[in-house]
Length: 166
Image (cartoon, rainbow, N blue to C red; front, top):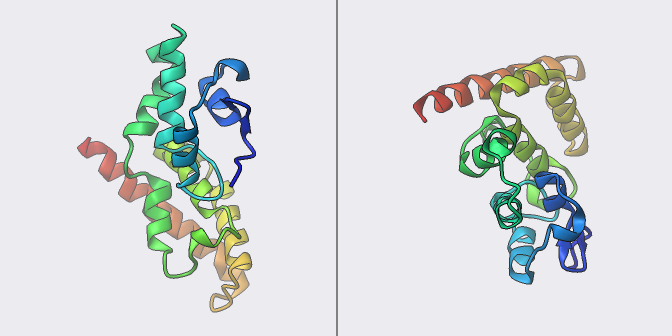
């Protein structure tokens, strides 16, 4: 399996995460394989964040104030996205490759609870898309958005509680 984000010995995702030019966002074959093991959609994960941090340090570009979000992302084990997706496991398997569930959960974990609160309508839209894609018909269409909103709010509340224990 070839990663579409790999350009010779560099990674576009690492370049984007570290906000550095592509040529210095080097990635090894091993790191690339480990990243792909996270799923079909290459996304923010421990491998890509680690490589981004390493790239910044190696090139003398790391600044805690500017790149602190990467440290938070790599240390964050439980966030709104993971909590929300774990509450929906019985609806669909994100590994089937037909949806963006895993990628969107990682984005929400990266955002943190405050941004998830601000972006609740975006997340509700994602859940509505997922419901349609996975054929969720047992919830009447007019109620789906409200149910999605409640699920997101519950995940945010749980994630906020978890963050306070860190």
